[in-house]
Image (cartoon, rainbow, N blue to C red; front, side):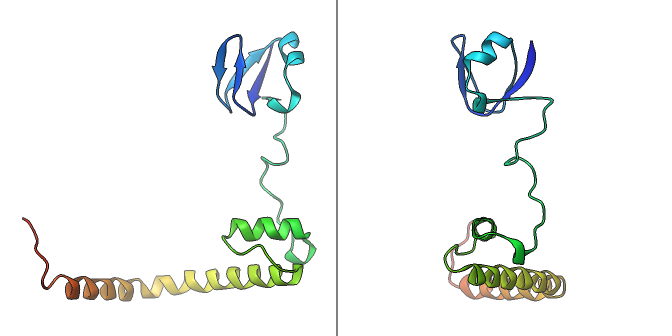
Length: 127
């Protein structure tokens, strides 16, 4: 018997086994299953499960660029050059936003407080 992790939900011996569960299977049981449905527990993770290696944007294929754009919540349309530029601008903008956030948090909060006060002048509140 060997340990396997399910890649999909399975029905085995009348029992439902959820995706990601670790189970022990005999060689006969393994032979009856689709190899894509299970992975040996002690085996290296499938490539889709590994953290992607940092590939420079200039070396990424269009599929990789689209995946990166999707990951960042950006539009996935356009040429490779468009995708690279969109991703670089987004990443550069996030780097600037993170450094700006440290110094402007108080300003944002006071602006929120002012808008709350303005909108609550005629509001009915319960205590």
